[in-house]
Image (cartoon, rainbow, N blue to C red; front, side):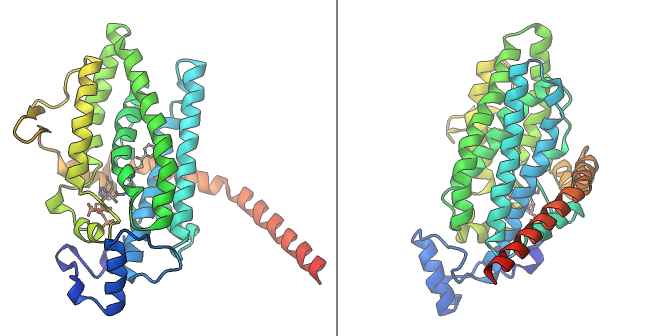
Length: 331
Ligand code: BYC
């Protein structure tokens, strides 16, 4: 949404020589590992890129609650239900930390949220696929939160202080989420043949979206070069995708499930797994709002916003009364 406002595209990453003395001094601080804080001077394009990425990230957490909350009422045991409720609540908390981090950049949470509700803002492609069976809840925790951890651990070291600090707690919670998902998969894979087949089916459907969610291939990633120069991103999309694949294949083998990609095999020379062709046409369709659940997700978020109007009004009225009482007391 903000890309057109960012003056420095992939090919236009400025060298230190091209920068003004102020920008050069700032970039040198970044190169030296110094964090940028909200009141520091920063280039407009850096601020806009952060607003874009952090708000998309916040929206992803918020929309990401929907595919899983769909199963809270149908979890197979009380224990699984309590765990899933805690996980979904954590995601709401992640959204709140991230919306707070965006506000430190001088934009209001309501403004960025309005862009989500209108369909203008992006959020992660992964949440536009349906959770059809209980095994999908296992696959989402294991693969989606697993991908999120691989992406977010480096963000704990990114150049913008409030974003980096927010990620520390998010990553700790994501580790719990990933383990609860894997635990569901282990239980299903040790269960009846029908349960194991359910686990395989969930893996087959979630594998490709989970590796695509790391973003377009490096040569098609318009923002990576600049974001990496600014240390908003510390790794490229393909590097993180490869890391996720390398760590997840042994887990698939441990579960005794079939690899979901016939081209997935260890490459001794590269020291990594090779993998098959990602369907980028499908990915960009989903990103553009044409995925299986895009409409449903936005409708759910809009309904929640509309249903909550009376509550927001009550909170505002209460805060106004408190302010008036405080003013009277101070007079
Ligand atoms: N979905 O130049 P690129 C979670 C867009 S939360 C949709 O590589 P960038 C969880 C991209 O925005 C998961 N759009 O972009 C929550 C750009 O478009 P614009 C969310 C995508 O920013 C609840 C265009 O494609 N995590 O896991 O350098 C429950 C070109 O891409 C996607 C984050 O947000 C996508 N998958 O790199 C459970 C992490 N990928 O904006 C789990 C923080 C790309 O120019 N974000 N696009 O119009 C990032 O690390 C980076 O923003 C990305 C993309 C790696 C996602």
